Image (cartoon, rainbow, N blue to C red; front, side, top):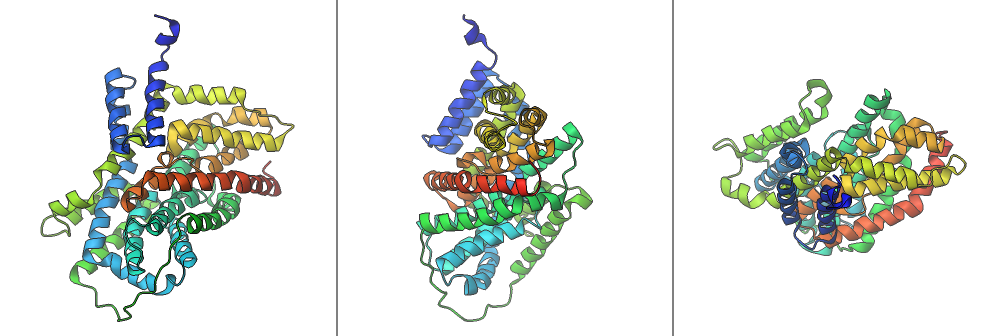
Length: 434
């Protein structure tokens, strides 16, 4: 047997590569591809079971699960329709206004809620009810646009707020653990919000309005809402407690996933909760849950097998990093992050990239902290939906076809790299970061 066939990374790379191609092309349903990955990885023993199935033990998986459960309860009790009624009275006068309001709400909520999945869980049933009241039917292109506005607004724009998503926290932890660098909230916000928050949000709104046109109709019924029922009040108080726990996580130390899981259990308890076993079976999309577990497991396997490190070191050798050409180096570092996003997904990229940041800094002459910050543009701009699990979850909740998510991913990525990347370079330079 040749040395190539016995090379330790060959089989893991083959399994990971085939999985990524299947997700990228949607040749099979995403959850079936995830199950095939689990089967092939376990059969070939490319990593320990705790790594391959690590997605099921991650907080992200349980946030997805609890998000589905809470979403069912919010819709059933009428709380979603009540919130939508309040919003649709003022925000459905035009399609641009409606899309902009959903994107802005997704972004604004990131300042007070630390979890992408939690924000999507709260917003999707409300946005769905608002769409229904505005005459936008399920399964229409306009509805796909609103669902994607929640997913993209939640994930991509929240990258500008330090504690608002998982990749940011991974990057922060890696920077502190590897170099003793502690990232601060306000400087981080100032560095990223003008370009990757405000301008990117405007481009996102424009692309959704162009790719997914809609014609909302003002609600016909103008009668005042009825008083909240008993179940609505109980669920509203429960959600208020959950939101309070999420916002104050740094005080009590209980992660958003476990707060959400506890709330989900309460919601399903007989005689105490709001949903039955049949409603749980119908409303909780286990296909998406398995898909997310597969994405997270893939990232763990890539890290543990050494595939990520090998790819990172190869990119370091071939990318044009040169202290005499700063803009080219800026492009190259963003390209490295984009390439890593294909095999590690957004949650895994910062863990590897940040550990290589000192080598990148030496090669480019950029300050170490700036090199670490440059990756944000790359991992917050997925080229395909599977690279960002919150987008996958939003698509699952909204029953958005893979093609629609891919089209918006690619369109926003092209606009980001052609327009926002040069502006981001200018903004880094204005702030004296390069």
